[in-house]
Image 1: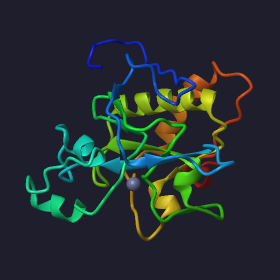
Image 2 (image 1 turned 30 degrees about the vertical axis):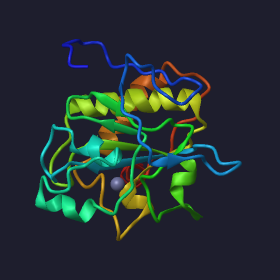
Image 3 (image 1 turned 180 degrees about the vertical axis):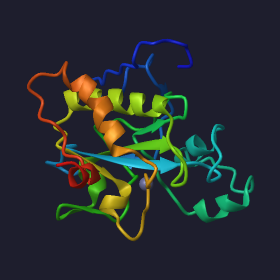
Image 4 (image 1 turned 90 degrees about the horizontal axis):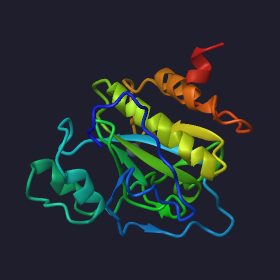
Amino acid sequence: MTEQTSLPPSFSIGADGWCHPEEVVRQSSPNCDARPDGCVADLLVIHNISLPPGQFGGHYIADLFGNRLDYDAHPYFEQLRPLRVSSHFLILRDGGVVQFVSANERAWHAGVSCFEGRERCNDFSIGIELEGTDFEQFPALQYRALAALTHALQLRYPLAAVAGHEHIAPGRKTDPGPFFDWAQYQQALAGHMQQTSGKLPLHFPAIDKKVN
Ligand SMILES: [Zn+2]
């Protein structure tokens, strides 16, 4: 995961919804359940998270998703005590990826949400957390990993669109925030898409309004 290499990261999603164990760190979260009948993952939701906010590294995010956070370790953590949350994936600042929930299952990342008239986005989405904040840029390594992971998910699921948490829960959520560069994400993904014939391009949110 921290090897120095010029090769882009590569992921493969198995039929069980898990990345190959050599590509990610698996830390199963109990905060998941089955998708409702007839629901398939056609939306990717991008988030940011850091615990405590603005601090990177450490194990607190995985602890939160695993319901084992030491709520006394930092004053901010007290407000997290009632939460039972997870995401499918977390991309660390160095581009390393942790997977908590099979992408076949429903992770609990979006909360009250709506995408193009469809509510309860957890039912039909895959959630990717970027270790980060609303207040600083994301490293290139994270975009590379995000693009590679997105590409792998496209090969397994009928993904049609990407949205930020801020887009599906406006007024309530602000992540991934103003420093997340949707154009850089889209460009990184385009490099992968050249290898993927027959896949429709993903619909991106803000970028569509800026370009063309
Ligand atoms: Zn979020």
